[in-house]
Length: 262
Ligand SMILES: Nc1ncnc2c1ncn2[C@@H]1O[C@H](COP(=O)(O)OP(=O)(O)OP(=O)(O)O)[C@@H](O)[C@H]1O
Ligand SMILES: [Mg+2]
Image (tube, rainbow, N blue to C red):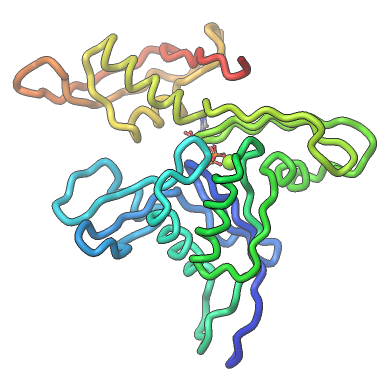
């Protein structure tokens, strides 16, 4: 707390599904990467969990956006607004001047120059004075306590919402990496497609994600460990009356078969 501006250091994992901000070695923000904007003025109405509640719901004057797709920024203005909103959550207490920010941001290891520029620009527009970028597998390795400087290889596989990062880290650098744009969100949309094709039931992205988390499995046979049946609600796509269906997904019925490591 102070009268004069000072530098605050924050680390940000700007993810397709969730954004995490760390300050003073503590997670201070962990929110879904969603922002709700006023359709006419583009002013931010809500960010994070609050905005996620509005996601996929139609409203005349509000549009909700997930600014990142496949691990990279897809909507610059919305991304800046979201970053601003989330950074504002970090600033607590009454300050006459907001601190200038020194930020380090995780980026997918397969990012192009243009994508890196986009992250840097968005961060600078969201009041980041010094902005540093770090490849996500390196940040993950440091985060879980691996000695990244050691003369030995460690492999990191990070399956996120929009991208899967696979990297071998040794002697303080990434010696081999692959970043593929198939991850959790694709499995969610595969479930939506499956429900529609197989059962004619339209399920929302949120519902499909819940199905994935509750009964999704990468193995076809879970034996004794199979989860309980899961009840799914959704309108039938064919019936004119658009009945709401109560639907039971059988134990380990949904099998996540996307081959991630192609
Ligand atoms: N228990 C679970 N089982 C299966 N999938 C899960 C589970 N919990 C979360 N997920 C999925 O993980 C993904 C989010 O992971 P994470 O927060 O690491 O992504 P992200 O860092 O935002 O994305 P990216 O790194 O690709 O930009 C979502 O697709 C979510 O549905
Ligand atoms: Mg991630």
